[in-house]
Length: 277
Image 1 (cartoon, one colour):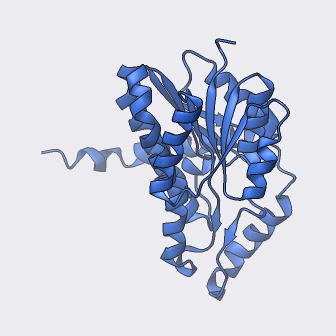
Image 2 (tube, one colour):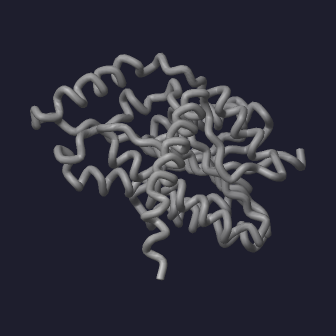
């Protein structure tokens, strides 16, 4: 039992969070899962193991984040692992999408994750151990039309994760950014926020993309249960990766993007060095 951990996972009512919580509980770990609705909290705590503890939390409420973490530590003891899973996707052409929708996207996907990290770090540092997993996306490496706000939030979380890992390495605290490809979650379904269309110039470019994403929802290649098992393996690994892609589509698309960037860097190499003094 000494290897069993207390894992705090944001957003356990669906998707990766739900799959990871179920997998961790089945493996004997204790899971604190955040949810937004009381019905989801009650459902989570009915888990037969008796090791599922729900906390209602809105990630846009900074004061509540700090209090939930503090209260959980007082009641259940030290947290060993934080998994920043909660988030959602925004879809919309940038010119058509109000910046209030961008602010909301970053409040949840970036600021909420960072404030969760800040809440657990003092105890992690004091104990000289801990693990933070940030669920990003292949959209933190590649882009496609219509999800500029979402990709921006995931690019930000990838960069934050990378810098944070360097800051925490002296304290034996690991940071892993997990970037999934297309998985059978609610991301493209009920969790997706879509800005209305009204500029006809973008119809030919974007309407087929939006329809294809809707049609593909629920039929993606990736299996959330398999992703959960991989993430649990990472949690139990003494030398976890700083970055991990999940899914063959993510692997191919990110490799292609890195190759494209390398070609462009080489093509403009002379210009790059021409600015040296």
